[in-house]
Image (cartoon, rainbow, N blue to C red):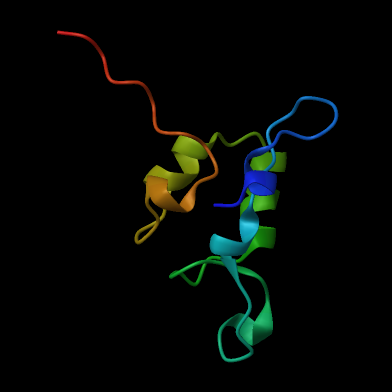
Length: 80
């Protein structure tokens, strides 16, 4: 990853690099932006989030969707 890709935005918020997570393919869902390696439309995920779903609820409800597809970081490991 380049130095520029790791820098936060001017307001200090983290920058999401979506290019590795979202794909466009005219043969899948008529070219709508989809979560990489799935047939889940980005607009569908945004609608769920707008309806109050959490990222965890979305991941649990969708077959073929894993935490690696999420922009959310992995939860911290609990200490023994």
